[in-house]
Length: 300
Image 1 (cartoon, one colour):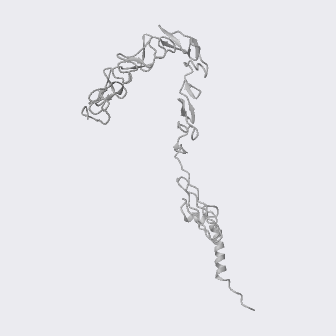
Image 2 (image 1 turned 90 degrees about the horizontal axis):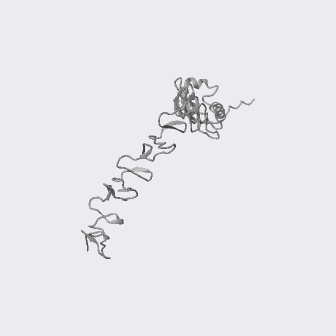
Image 3 (image 1 turned 90 degrees about the vertical axis):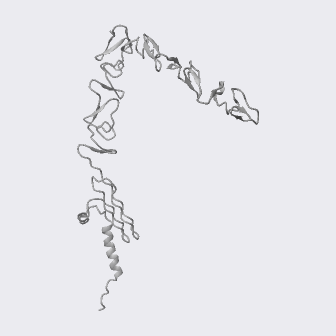
């Protein structure tokens, strides 16, 4: 009887490669991987390289609580594909905080993340026990906290406005009982003699810089009204000495447009250097002839 032939070395190598492919093709952090778990710390691990035909092992996920990427997937080999990289670990926050995209926050008190990540409180509200609430005595009307007990536009309830002759008292629109010379404007008692928003009459507001004096909008001492606002004609370059007198690039000094050192004002030409200006050489309007230059106030 002929002797059985031994398996060739090549066939043994193929069998071993197939067996290695079976283990390498599995995730290094998956089920049935207790041996690797016991030998490798539970942080991110790289996947095994592919054999001739099997796919490379998937990278292990990063350890929980450690921010960062997971392990690199195994390299491809021969016909096998490379393994997939492991997932990054999640950030853990100390109680009672919760992990939000911008860090750890207490969802019960955070005005930026109230009750859930990304829910911000606004309009005067604050986060209390995970909900945006208004201060005591106020209600949320159109995303803004208002005092419904005294607000004439939201008297007693959102949107309930009092008429112009009434004021809001304890959430009720009542006939105004204003003191002295006060009048009711917008449901509020105001002094028409001194209110900058209601000067002399309701809704008659004073301009910028003005104040209400005895029912008339007035500017501070030494200022005048120009363009709806108060200006100082002694120093304002756009209203120098009076409304509308513009000094251009010059300065306004004592109500007169002046020029800097070494310059002279020549009408509409502004400030010029009489020593060098060919159109105003030596004096205003004295122009040099063609080909001449102004030098030390003389055409040469």
